[in-house]
Length: 310
Image (cartoon, rainbow, N blue to C red):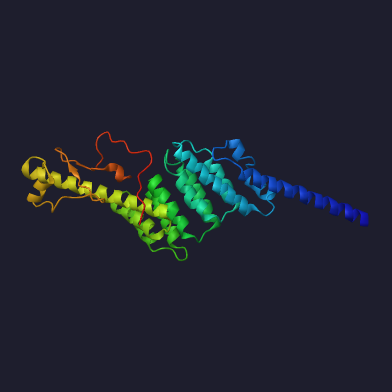
């Protein structure tokens, strides 16, 4: 009996040593992955469940490593000119399966997945799946509902589902009051510029991340420019209806009582009025995300020029 117990203990000890060695090997293997690694290298063990077992309680550490690699992979691919980002979803899926409470992986991961190439993977459906998994495991984090609504609004143009996501979030503890406003506006005026301004204002006022703040500020400037161009072109048409021709300058519109002063874009640059009544941006590169006022045949830079916030 004693000998049997000793044998059992010895076998158990040996197994622990082997498993421990395997866990160390696994952690080192993942930690040594290059940013430009192949699919086979990154997904050396592709099953999150198997990885969790092999980590022997270090699943949180392993999740951090995979999350770090996901960020490095996205950044490396983006700065190399963009691409298919084919490793992004597997890396994020493994990260969040290993640690379902790693909130940045949901929030930033969704911003990597949703945008069209070269700025992202162009898979907003996967971004929705990722954030919904985050909500399932962190149901009281209202920020995730905000992220979900944003994907539906900005990437999928599904204003009904965006409204639903914001409404769900508004019912969570300590949710920002803006969510109820966004839910209502999405339901009634989903595609309007005023709704876009409300959304980006909410993002700007609820985030503490410098990148997100700068991105929201850039979108707010773009929305304002789009609203300016729309209004100025409307006034140019009013002038045409009164006089039979378009104004040759904003000064003429001032004289006609349609304007006060020379209109400036959100960065202080004057708008340009064409002979056909169209209004153009003087420096469109400085106002990424604008939809109106772009010169004919304008090509936006591959990387949006986003100015840092103070």
